Every structure is written in C-alpha cells, then in structure tokens.
Amino acid sequence: MGSLTLPDSGSVYLDSSAVIYSVERIEPYLTVMTPVWEQAEAGQFTIFCSELVLAETLVQPLRRELRTLESAYRNVFAAPDVRLIPATRRLWEDCARLRASTGLKTADALHAATAIQAGCALFITNDADFRRVEALPTVVLDDLLD
Image (cartoon, rainbow, N blue to C red):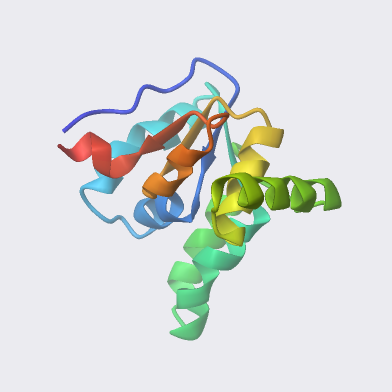
C-alpha cells in the first residue's frame, strides 16, 4: 500500500468520500487518511471542504437517525484544522466553467472549483473523474492501494 505525499504547508481539500472513509473508519482508506488528519491537527496544513461536503456526509446519518455518527461528522467540521468554504456566486460561476470544460457533474465541479479557488496544494478523492481538471493536484485513494 502506498502513502500520501502531503504538503509541508497550505491546505488540503477533502471531498466527501475522503471524509466518509475517515469518520466511518472504513479500511483500507482509513489507514491512508490517518496521516492527513494527524498532520493537519499538528498544524502542518489546513483541511478545506466545500459546505457541500457537510450536506453530502450528513444524508445517511440523518436518514437512518444515527445521532452518534451525525455528531461525529459535525465534530469534524467544527475542528479548528478544518475549514468549510461557502459556495459563493463566483464559485458557482467557476463551477459552471469547469462543467463546460471537463464534463464533471455539478457537485464534483463545485468541489474542484472550491479547491482551486482556495489554492489547495492537494485534492484528495476516490473519484478518478477529477483528473480531468488539469489545475487540480489530485490524489485518487484507490491508486494508493495497488
């Protein structure tokens, strides 16, 4: 199993899958993601997510009335080393441009636009479609499992 090469400083963007694997402790991804959380907590970098990640990750806990899991997600998003980025008009316009140029779905284009606009040094996902965004330094978690 490979490991992530993390930036020395700046910010790292996590899409919903990376957050879900971490909070729900899903292996083998949890093992790969643990250094991200540890190094962010140590102040090496900040974790960024679109507010869309909040909406995407809370669906199942709310639907299934899993209050403990819901609280776990809320605690992650309240952590001092995690920053939720709101979707502004400019972000939606950047999202539209990315959709037009890459064919990404709206939600994915919003994640990518958010990471680019925030100047993230790394984008962690498990969706290879993000490779279509040339300006996005993307790591696909499954690639590390070979």
